[in-house]
Length: 164
Image (tube, rainbow, N blue to C red; front, side):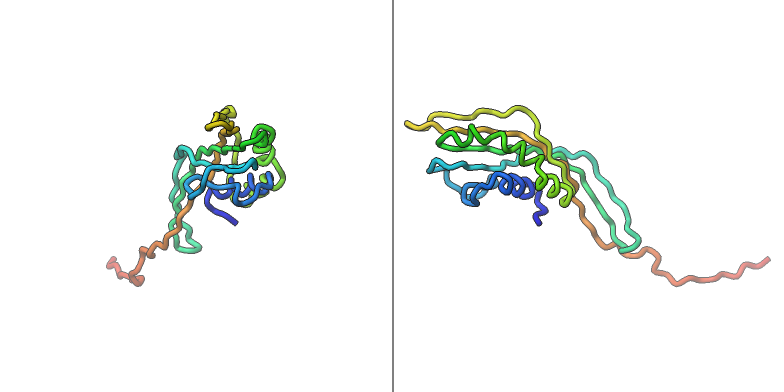
């Protein structure tokens, strides 16, 4: 079970598209450009927007529970030196609505939605064409942090007599 949002998205897409692990990566990992004609997929983290924050006390555990709601933008790039990327780019949408995708979102407490248009970033590299498509989506999730709060009332109860 992954708790990092980018890894949740990556798991859903990789599972549903059945792409080998060495053809799938999260942006920032040390990888080389595609060298064969297989399908390659990369998850890229975009901008994040804070939706709201909360701070509540949990009396059952004497903990302060802080939370921040985030809307995180991601881009899924589908790349190949053959027609694989062109023919399979729509499978990203299908992965996000699949039973596995929905169950993982529910399990992890996130919501992933496809947004915007698919960008065709294909270009000619030397004498060969590279098919490349960027598919935008957003994920809504909450990050929480729990910290122990010292009990405020450390004094023993006392009774004062009041004269009438």
